[in-house]
Amino acid sequence: MSDSISLDSTVVAEDGLLLTELDREVVILSKAKNLYYGLNETGAQVWNLIQEPRPVQEIHDVMLEKLDVEPEVWERDLIDVLQALVDQGLAKTVE
Image (tube, rainbow, N blue to C red; front, side, top):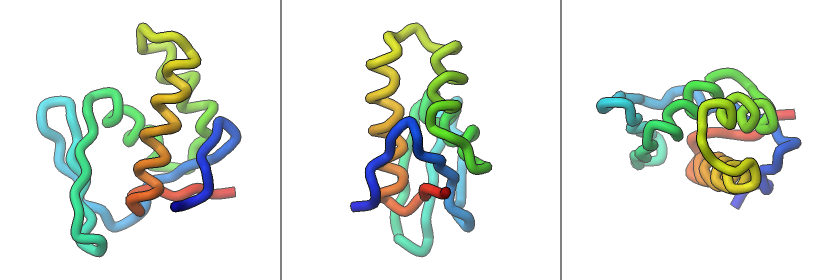
């Protein structure tokens, strides 16, 4: 498992992944890891935001404006999604 993601982390998508959009969802394919990963509409929006290095706090704030959810619930859900992407080798933390 990678370092733990927090609001202070900065995250970016890994290079060299194949991506397809299905409706408003996204499927990411890593040929190197021989896996695919699906993201719902909200996850797809997060994925679009991490195409360049972005602080997790910024992602949280941008998406919170679009969502009808309590900030603490969104923080936990966002960190869970980003941690899963990092753990699967689809994204990484940067300094």
